[in-house]
Image (tube, rainbow, N blue to C red):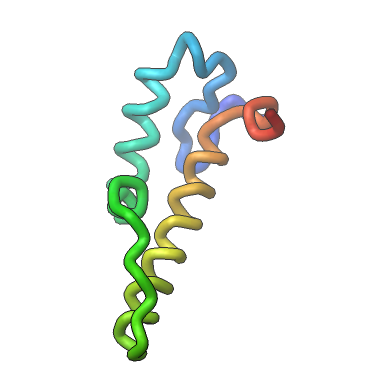
Length: 81
């Protein structure tokens, strides 16, 4: 397993010790990938029209991308707790 995660950022083995550093890396990466808003906003309600569903679907895609980025930033041992 590589010591570096997605985009060359370090994988964090000790999240308790490195939490602040990990949080800074993750936030920066999510902002760079333009998915940070999925982390800091609630999911929009699905609407009765296609516009409402489009917004909710776009948020779901951003949320999944953000989760993937976070998962790729930590060592696998943290993913199975």
